[in-house]
Length: 233
Ligand code: DX5
Ligand code: ZN
Image (cartoon, rainbow, N blue to C red; front, top):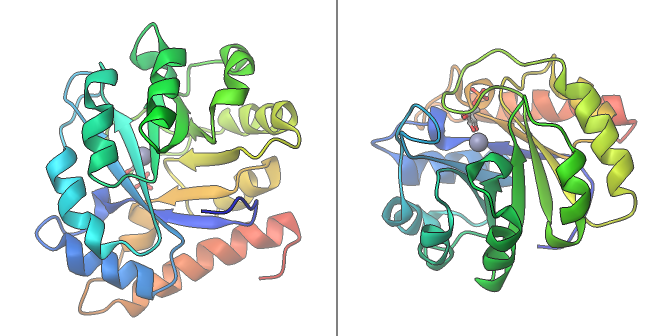
């Protein structure tokens, strides 16, 4: 996983067919996605339940790109090793998930994963300053975590701009997660985000029997984002 700030599209499998994850992942990768985003929810930190380490281990052999695991769980620390062993490349914990995020990020790197730090929409960026040498990715939530298909929260654009300035030349990705479409992706790419998570906007209208639609959706989001950064589409 070499570092680059080029735009990366990370479909969230929360919007995939849960009975067919292997085929869904093979389809989105064949259609050009860059990372695969896995939303882990515990029914406690967020009001929804999804999946745990066994599911991550089961889908791992189908992922040829990057397995990006977003932990919406509290506590985090007791589960880090299990998700690392399940094959997570990036393991992202929420700043709000407990009092010792510094220790959590250390443990994630210690387990051999890239360390991600997620911020809820209501959380400021002051605390991030003291964690910059411990993170490989900062995930700015552009919806309140828990569900796919929610509306993008525009106040997060300014947060991404300020984070981008704070990061400077450090090799830290800015990921945005929630409500990303061809309309909202360019706003965030211009603000400095490079990893765009999209669930509904990638999977809408397609299926494993009609995967070309996934490719059209991925390319449309990428084109819109790259146009906003001045990169070649
Ligand atoms: C929200 C999840 C997101 C979500 C994105 O809690 O972290 O990854 O699935 O879905 P869309 O793109 O549909 O907002
Ligand atoms: Zn997510």
